[in-house]
Length: 197
Image (cartoon, rainbow, N blue to C red; front, side):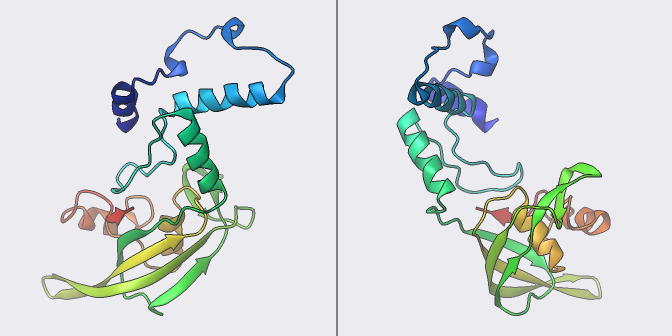
């Protein structure tokens, strides 16, 4: 995995791979020391990876080389100072060409691997802009596809994928949210989801 590569490249020791020994963790009444130990454990357990991408999503992955950079970058994500941009190819012609999807997203209680629009979910906002319309010709059928730029304002798991499905424009090749038949046909042309960070 990317995490294995980063651990080896940056020589970061993952505490999960070691035999736990609670006596080696410094104990102190000071909250600062406790936070430092927690931050260090998180940094090492994530190998400095500040944020994650879905397995088939391509794009930039931000990795910190040390604890100070990791803490700083995570704070920027938490305070929403980082502006993320994604490009996706979706089924159908998205209208209007610019817009915003503002709907709560949460893990589905009946399928823990999937997320969806839930009333008790977490607030999620994705702005979008259609870059162009493409056409997929398959025999006698022609289907419009939208090449769209997306700007998630929150960072929920599968947020973009769920939001695009919600507006009836699932991402090309998405095995979870485009539907089984659509996904199977898409993957004859592209072996992964068409989403780039």
